[in-house]
Image (cartoon, rainbow, N blue to C red; front, side, top):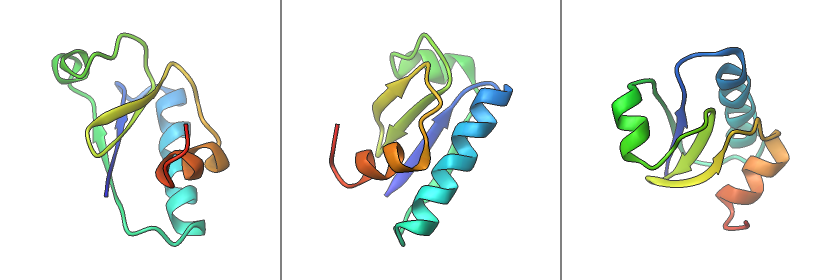
Length: 79
């Protein structure tokens, strides 16, 4: 599983990344976290508001700092 944090490195992006790390650690999920900071790549994924979170290339959230439980729910297939 590949989890992407899309954003330019703002504090909210860093908070989302930290929460994603907590989610995969606490959920014992085999996943890699990738930071996507290139604005063209972010826009190519359809994201206009950062931070955004994508799982296996599919954008699941934009413009929010999800907490670890919300991220864990998305990883496990929730909405």
